[in-house]
Image (cartoon, rainbow over the protein chains, first blue to last red):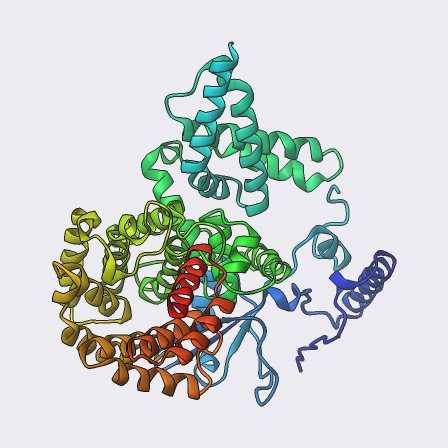
Length: 130
Length: 417
C-alpha cells in the first residue's frame, strides 16, 4: 500500500537559525538514506514556504486564483499530483484541470530545488560541485 | 570638457532618466530575470552614463545604450560575487550566453517589455494591494512614500508588500510575460484598475504642494494607449477616454497662481480640444460595444461636460441619467456622492443635500474630504452658513493637498464676510 506523508510544522526551514537548519537537513539526509535502504522510499520533496503558494478554484468553468495556501477550515487534503511545469501560469493551467478544483480547491506550491535541499534529500549526486 | 558642457550632459542624463528609466528597467527585468538585479543594473547603467557620455557623447539611442550597459554591469557583478557563491557563476554564464532578443532592445521591444512588466506586477497570484504597490513602484517609479500617501497606508507596510510580492514572483516562478489571449480579459481588469489609480495620483496628487503631477498622468495615459493598441477591450477604451477627457482640463484646473478652479468656473478656452475630440470618439467606440462598464460610463459623463460650451449649458439631466446606470455597475458611496452633486445641479441644492446627508448618516465617506466640501457647498447655496462653515472645516481637516486647503480656507473666509 502506498501513503503520502504530509509534513506539517509551524516553523519552516527558512525560519530556523543556521545551526538548527544544518542539523535538520542532516537528520533528513540520514532518514532518507535509511528508508531508501529499507525499500520504503518512493519519493520526497521539500516545499517552498506558504508565501509562494497559490490557490486555484474552478467554478462554472471560470478559473480563479488567489495568493496564498488554502485555508484549512472545511477543506481537507484528499490527494496530490506532482507535476512538471515551466512556470506558475502553466502549473495553474494544469491544476485547474484537476477535477477536485471544481469542487474544492487545489493549492499549487513550488518544490524547493535549492542545491542544499537537493543534496540533503539525495536528489542530486553527492559529488555535484558546490 | 567645460563645466557648461558637462552640465548639459548631466541634464541630458536626467532627462533620459525621467523619460526612460522605467522602460529600461522593464527590459532589464526580462533580460536578467530578477527585479532586484535589474534595479541595481539600472542604477549602474545611469552611473556609467554620467561618467561616459561627457567623454563619448550622448548615444544616438540612449535606451539601448543603457540596457546594454546595465546588462553588462549585472553580469560582471554576478561574476565577482561568484567567487563566494557558485550559483552566481552559473547565473552569470547563462545570462552572458543569451543576449536576449537584440531587436527587442529598440523601441518596439521596449514597449512590449512595459506590458510584460505591468501584467506581471498585476498577476492574480499576488495579493491585490501588492499588485498596486508593485506596479506603482516598478512601472511608474513612485517611491514607497508616494505610494503610501496615495493609499493612506504606512510606508513600512507598503515596503513590506513590495518585498513579499517580489519574493512570490521569484519563488513561485511567476513568468514575465503578457497573458495569452484566453487569459487576457480577466487579467486586464486589475491592470485597468491600477492604471486609473496612477492617473489619479498624477491628476490630483494626494498630498504636497502641487495639485497635479503631469508626468504620472502622462504615464497612465501612455499605458492606456498601449493597452488599447494591444487589447482594445471596451473598458480599456473607456478608461483611455476617461483619462484623456480629464487631462484635457489640466490647464484650466489651476489658476496661474496655482489655485484650484472648479469645473463651473474654468476657462473652457484652455481645454485641450484635441484630447476632447479623441476622448469623445473613444467614448462612442466603447459605448457601441454594448459591454458598458464603469470606466466607459464615467468617460461618457466627462464627455457631456466636455461638450458643453459653458457651465450653464451643461446637460445635467443626461449626467444624472448616466450616474443612474453607473450606480448599478459600480454601487460605491463615491459614485453616489457624485450623483448627488449632479442631482443638485439638475434639481436643486436641497435635493442634492438630502442625498449627501443620507450617505454621511450611514457612516460612509466620513473621512473623505470631498463629501464634506460637497455638503458645505450645498449648505452655502442654501444660505445655511453655520452648517457650511462646520462642513468646510471638516473638509479642511481631511485634505492634505495645498491648493485644496487654500481653496477651502478661501471659502471659509468668504463665509465670514
